[in-house]
Length: 346
Ligand SMILES: O=C(O)CCC(=O)C(=O)O
Ligand SMILES: [Fe+2]
Image (cartoon, rainbow, N blue to C red; front, side, top):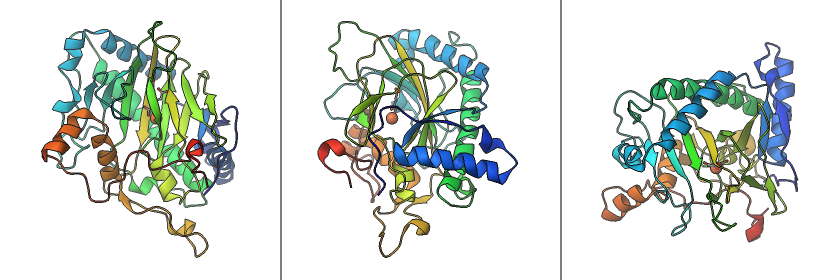
């Protein structure tokens, strides 16, 4: 298993070379991505090609949404959806039981435009309100651009791991990749250690995060929390559980958190996945007699659902009542990543 370094700042990688028609240039850029992923599992990317107008539209819509009265937002509560989309009020999501994160969110999922029996897939619940003109158009436009960037990064990470460039993207057609609009309100009277989002690894392959203000902290290989400030025109990318498992620990998911914010803050993570039914297990290239498979097989959508069902109150109560059951191979939350603070860091 690769160990993260005692980095004190996150690496920055200009990825414009991934768009090149020259395979050597794509590989050279991918190698930089790979070095950053191995060292930190967290990095900034510049040269990503996403139109700033799409980012501005997303920010404007998120601000307008969260300014609405609670009752308007509650009309679109996530518990009403079939694919886990909609408004997530403060306290609904509990990464650590009994600990309230001071944030609210609106979750957008891949919109299949039709129902689907698999949880986490289906129709997205959009906040259809006259107070939010253009919300769906603007948010979908950003979602599509970020998903395309995700596919580019999947190709880059495949090259960085010595795999065929399309090794991951061949498993992507309608991925349950979720965009979250998160709002951390500013409260000067809150205690300094108030959680915005508790320490965790992301469940997916990797995340494309757009933050609007400082507050994100990342755990380095020495068990120290490192600030990840906002870098202009950059996205933050971090490795999640599923790329850790697929690469048999060649890349390792990195823990991160947000505590009390010093100003009102928004963050927009897109969690990049393979298709729902993709089996996630160490790829044969990373398994040998001296390097046994360290991760039991999971199904992508089932892992997402299991993690979500163990952390969202509306799903926990459906589990408790027997209306829902966890998939057989479910992992407890916090099963991935290096945990230097717990002495688990091999
Ligand atoms: O707010 C942030 O910067 C990070 C959010 C996050 O880690 C998450 O939603 O998984
Ligand atoms: Fe996260």
